[in-house]
Amino acid sequence: MTQSSLKVLFLTSSYPRSEQDTASIFLRYLAEHLTELGVAVHVLAPAAEHGGTSVENKIVVHRFRYFPKSWQTLAYHSGIMPNLRRSPWLWLQVPFFLVAMAGTLFRLLYEERFDLIHAHWILPQGLPALLANVLFRVPVVVTAHGTDAFALRGKFATFLKHFIIQRSARWTANTRETARALDAHSKAPEPKIVPMGVDKALFAQGKPDLLRRELDENETVLLFVGRLIEQKGCYNLLHAMSLLSPVIRGRIRLWVIGDGDQKAPLQKAAVTFGIREKVTFFGALSHHCLPDFYAAADIVVVPSSQGNSDATEGQSVVVLEAFAAQTCVLATRVGGITSMVRDGITGVLVEPNSPSALGQALEILLSNPGLRTRLAETAFAELKACYSWSHIAEEFVQIYRQVSCSSDPLIASCHK
Image (cartoon, rainbow, N blue to C red; front, side):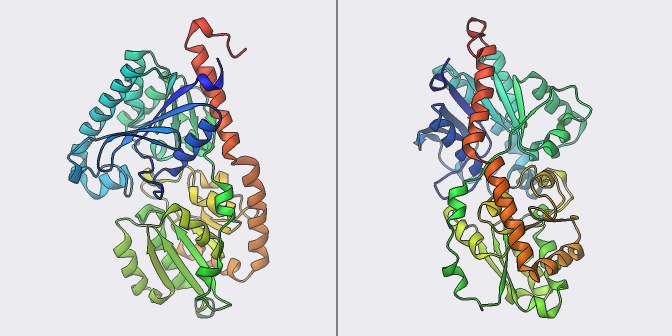
């Protein structure tokens, strides 16, 4: 079997809806690099509005509808779990979502032959994937990205996750922390740890001049990028800024990029903390706009909080983007971030849910540009060694080849 003969179907609950969209953009990068290695990639993902099939950069994307268009709000935006917490009535859409995904999946498998299904996120994608395995004898590879590992810790959900892992041909996790959250007290086989990567070239070419020309020469920029939901910790960052000494607070700016159900409360909190004039909320921006913001920033802050486990970071895309832009990272010890940021070497880590600890770390970094530069340079060197998309795609190709070969006794020796 050759790489060019591999035909893989991604099954996912999130995939970029346009060229500018950042929703699970790492899956598009992975798919694009797999196609460069000769793998034919199809993607089955929920529609935001209209369903249908399109070809995007050699990737065949199938969008399924699961509810009337104007009410179809379970996926995207803040993400499925935050959407369910914010609007519990959306649980009514979950059965329709699963049935629509499974029905479209079965139709695709009936119409075309795939070597395997790659289910991204154990729940909910793992369930229809395993059913397809039974009905169509197509092997399943499942990848845990974090939310699926840390969320839904009840007995039944835990049973389902372990059931899916144990019956998949292979499973991977993006960090060791994600894997530990799943294999504790489980008889599941050892996972393959394969991180998601980052477009190093894109984020290394950001141009800061246009964004910084409105700033004073001595002003320092803090950057927050992410969904504006409670677990991303932006409130703690605002609180930490208010604790800085007046001298330091007078020469910093905070840029907040992202949208979510906490945007209005965060804007109100900035007023309450007396820092509203120091904070700019840019809203959600195109992915291709982000490199300039990373380049213009002095510190990227990833203040994820430790609370509801369904938003615990499995792997932070923002950390990788900051590494690629050679911008210093300050983050919290949450989930997989601890395996990405080495405290005092590639960034600074503080305890979550502690605005005072965050503020103290900010004061140290703001007063020491040499330290920021050293941390950013070391992080960039590690990024090149560990998070190359071409290397990550090759690892998945090897997994695909092994699974495809072992699933067919007639070609079981093809990878020897």
